[in-house]
Length: 137
Image (tube, rainbow, N blue to C red):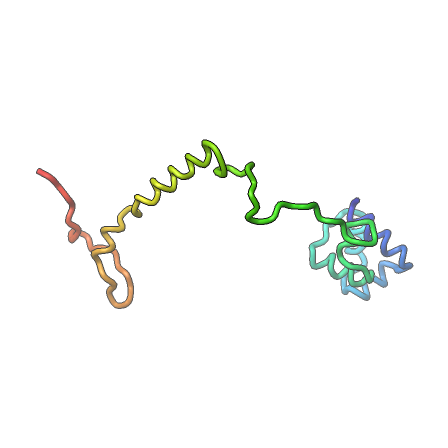
């Protein structure tokens, strides 16, 4: 269903003119006409204003029925789902290997900054020429 057709149908079913909607919403009549003719796509805020002016819950602008559409039965958060990558088989083995390897790494340069304490309440990078590099002869 196209929203413009639905808005016009709801307005005409309540025998309201575009001028009536203009008074109730503060939207210009020409704007309402452009929306109903499909030349302009209204924002969510505008749709909320139109729904209030028509005296309908907002879902009725999108759904042609008395009650909102029933949501499909979605899997519960945290439920076992073997279709998710890393839950079983080779994917699980690879994920565990990544975890082990990543747990052994340190952020690059963390040892450089760990030796320099905060100065004046701020953490400062090492000064040029003061860093000792490990050079083996």
